Image (tube, rainbow, N blue to C red; front, top):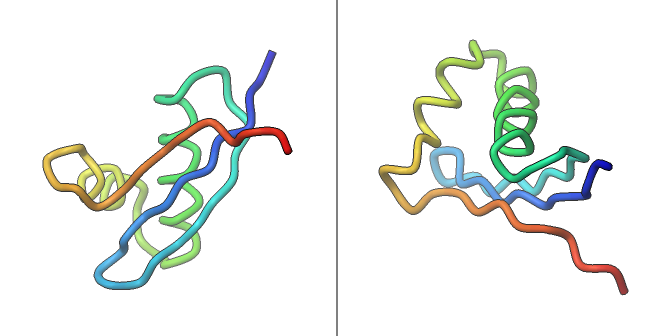
Length: 66
């Protein structure tokens, strides 16, 4: 079963909030990085490298039901 995740990404000062359904947090992160790459016209390896966990520039969490 897929879970809804919310990701907040700081792309060089621009905050992007992305939602994605995925089986786990890591898969959601990858889907979101691919979407950011498409949005900004770069290769997915650029976004996955930028959001590799070495800096505090993104957050991916389960979306809570209201």
